Every structure is written in C-alpha cells, then in structure tokens.
Length: 108
Image (cartoon, rainbow, N blue to C red):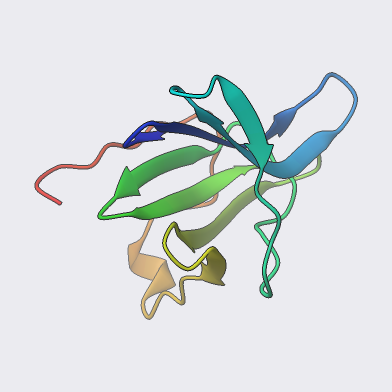
C-alpha cells in the first residue's frame, strides 16, 4: 500500500513462519522503518490477506494464519500509529473467512 512518499507492508510468509511485522519504505530517503505497535497489538500473523489504504487508514482483512482462514478486520491509523479491531455488527452478512482474495477502494 502506498501513501504520500511511503510504501507499507504488513505480515506475510518468510518461508518458515507467518509474520505480523509492519514496515514502511520511504521513497525519498530509500530507507525501511519498522513500525512498532504503540498500545494495541497488530493483527495476528498471517499471509494471503488483503490490505488497502483509505483516508490515512490502512485496513487489513482475512488471510491465512498457518492453520485457518481468518475473517477479522483491522484498521491502522497512520496519524496516531494505533491499531484497532473493527467490530462488525452483522458478521453473518459479510464475507466468510478467506485468503488469497483481493480488495480495492472505490469512491472512498
């Protein structure tokens, strides 16, 4: 996900373990910076999830944790540096747990 002069990457699979690390790459300085949680923990380790950026928020949905497909929905506020779990009021109306899917932002 890219915003301003930064490229963000969350989680993934390193060939041995699923990860929940979070980094940004700044295109002006050509440097990586690890983004550490301030108070709330980041989403659990996973790969094959989707991530989008919208209005200075990064949203993470689903993925695979090595054992199960997950269907949790997380938000990272770029300005405050805080993660939050998005509570869904009608989970039965939403997508089932999944991985290897895609997501886009359309009209905010």
